[in-house]
Amino acid sequence: MQGLSREDKRSIGEDIKTVQYGWPLGMPLIRKISKDLWEVRSHVVDGIARVFFTVDGGYMVLLPGIIKKSQKTPANELKTATDRLSKYKGAYDEK
Image (cartoon, rainbow, N blue to C red; front, side):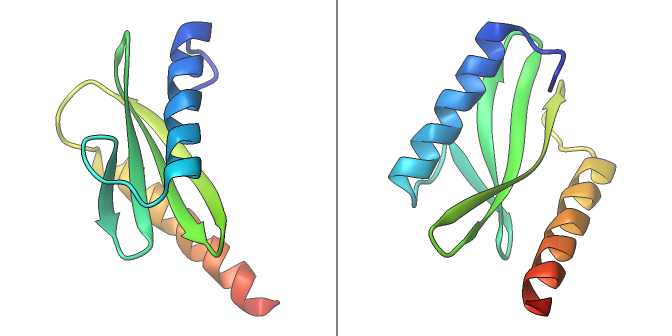
């Protein structure tokens, strides 16, 4: 995501802000992936941006983001998001 243009970053940031202040929301901006895992769906110049997230209490916890060029989310990217969600929940459960 760091290599994106300023306009693309702004667009993604505005979509994240919309979710943060309007939660809960649904399609077309938000799609549920699995239990406790959602994605923010943003359109950018190079394709479709997806930022995975979870909600913990009143907080939106951002997980990895990707730019995809096809309809299907790559399996390795989805695995990264679910792994990070598991690590986050594990760290939270230890407290």
